[in-house]
Length: 304
Image (spheres, rainbow, N blue to C red):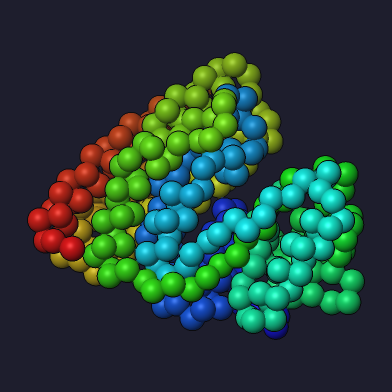
């Protein structure tokens, strides 16, 4: 059964797929709530050399757990490489086809996150994140997966609908995600998350990596996340009286971070200005985390 939900053109392609899955399951949740309650609004991950893999190479399991409070459980069902056997590929394809026939959304991440929207007689049909851009491939040939080229490092994802947590429980979990460095930890050497990511970014710019594709892409993704963090703060204030006293400062702070990171993404911006904007973004991030901590304390007094 084809999945007809539209995948929006987010830079954070994982969240574009999550948005489509939420729509397929008819979950009444805004974009800001998806980013915020799932925790991705607060994520940042930077490699020592500003590799564009920053948005992808981190331990996503804590994120999956936090997102489950919204009503979506993500499972990494299989990892396959260029050396996977024909039998292994057939087994994965059979599992995915069965799930699609039952109306269960499935996806993958190879170079970007994609929703598997259905299949034809030759292979899987996959969403492409950005209109007018024929990348990543919108078709995956059964058996060969030839559209992925010679280097394949694909993780297949399944998305189950689960019972959402009570709203207050979900909000508290999202704030704990934002405040706990362990929730942001990367699983590979050379990557840095949380406030340490800003330090790594500054050093990478000073070391000469600020004019490359990786700097641009990290800026695009993480600035988008902070814009949704700002919107999340605004929507929390509308839903929870305890959040209202903090909302304006959080929205202003996260928008300033987003603006700075968007400017830093400009390949032509001088390194000195990049460093200055990153330092300001780090300072703003620290202040926002302090406010989130106080908000969580207020919510904890309210109970579960």
